[in-house]
Length: 241
Ligand SMILES: [Zn+2]
Ligand SMILES: [Zn+2]
Image 1 (spheres, protein in one colour):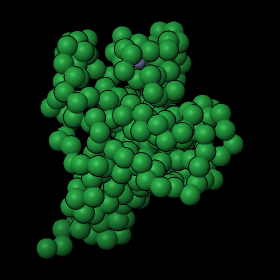
Image 2: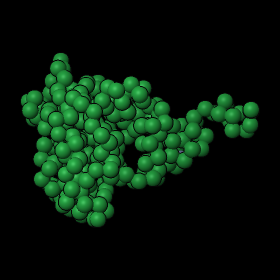
Image 3: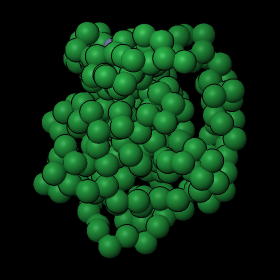
Image 4: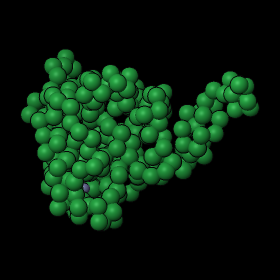
């Protein structure tokens, strides 16, 4: 069946991941402009936008101590939410390069070393096999390329862990404890950037940072596309676990 949409797809095969329009770009200028960048003050540990600069906030408490700096490009809301969904589930790995460049622009001012090692929160190999690619790995490659670096896998999943989405804060921490182990890497740096798509409670990121620090890394910078800013009720539930 060759309807109008099929013809358009043949001529202009790229849909915007935000609005779905055929605009020959993975993210159209209108959606790009609608992504609300995090600017101004944040919590340095979890990247949450705040009224004034804080080192640990009510939402992340003391559990993000292993992360020295968390940088979120934007807040987790539309149209970025749809874009990230396509990156992860819609075979949208091509989005990783433009999104990685956007995240790198937010990240760059917060780096202290000339050549940090860029790595990512890895999927379990079985999940990677199912999906065909690891979106965080692709994203890390995009971030690294924008900084003139290469992404290096420094972590691996020691075991599959159930999805975090349905869990409270205390359960999330238990869920990821011991879930990662270090990989031997040729490239070393005292500063490591850990890339992921979204930071919610930060339990996964804090665990990755702890593993890296046990291995001798001095400074861990979390680099995410979006900070999922929980409402007060959700945050209280997470704290109560
Ligand atoms: Zn769009
Ligand atoms: Zn915080």
